[in-house]
Length: 193
Image (cartoon, rainbow, N blue to C red):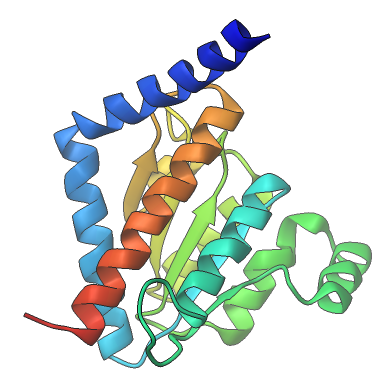
């Protein structure tokens, strides 16, 4: 059993080591941080969406922005789009689960906002639809996906495509990178150099 545990940890570390040496991915993290800081300075909002475990991760990251990360500071305008269960179940029932996020983006998001979509495959139809709607409204799209980016790749202004095809390893890295972005945004927005 201990060998299996060590093997799983080693797999997670191996993915993170690939990220650590991927200059393009590291530069993308910097660009996303700058885009979010600029959006916040311009009075815009940050939205998150995902499905299943990625929805939990989206909610977790939104809370880091709207609550706090390291420092006591004002709340930042960020929310996960799936948290209103009455809306979610009504729209999924009356229309389709595929439009739950795109309808919200159409209704509440504005030009200059940032939409982060988390999908390990990059092929979640409801996130793809949300990104298409975001593009029509001049909203910045950030895809958090697995290795190939899936159908979200061409719709993402910035793509965090984790170098793995293993869902748990991808999700672990999404949270790690999400935490890095939260920390850097908090530092740059509240303590500009």
